[in-house]
Amino acid sequence: MTALLRFDDVALRRGGRLLFEGLSLDLHPGEALHVMGPNGSGKSSLIRLAAGLLRAERGRVDRAALALANDDLALDRELPLRRALGFWSRDIEAPMEWLGIDHLAHVPVRLLSSGQAKRATIARVAASMAPLWLLDEPLNALDAKGGECLSVLVEKHLASGGAIVAASHQSLPGRWSKLELGA
Ligand SMILES: Nc1ncnc2c1ncn2[C@@H]1O[C@H](COP(=O)(O)OP(=O)(O)OP(=O)(O)O)[C@@H](O)[C@H]1O
Image (cartoon, rainbow, N blue to C red; front, side):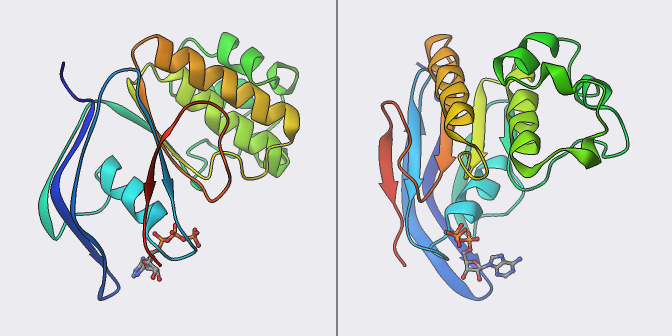
């Protein structure tokens, strides 16, 4: 089976610091990986590397088509939510419902609360149809209901043959294999 994400003997240096080296992993359809570790250990950097936004110092990274959810909202702040999400996909009605933000369709993105914006980011990822999801601190700013919505989407994505890497210092609902980065 082809991996949706593969790290082969990867080393990453940032700000002059070697964050990790010799890291190899394969993530196949249906698999979810939780990247853990203390502040500054390199969780977000690993996500950015997986997304192709950072270059490995050594080794090789191969990835399938992906959708990234991190601090960059990647939505036009001046547009109403439905139109902003519509930039990414024509199929945004169901993802907005799944995340409980359909009632915000006409609200300009810049007026969303941080939890609503987080839900919008996850809706963007869910609408992308990308097989590989990269989620940086997906639970940040989400309330309990938002966390439940996310966990339903995660299960759905894995069941349909997708794969997920999530960086989080919080425990994530569901079955995840774990990768612990050092301090
Ligand atoms: N743009 C940058 N330039 C140089 N170094 C950076 C940059 N961004 C992050 N770093 C460094 O890389 C290291 C890892 O940062 P990263 O944000 O990946 O950690 P993290 O595990 O996600 O932390 P946190 O739990 O605090 O979010 C830190 O030492 C940080 O100072």
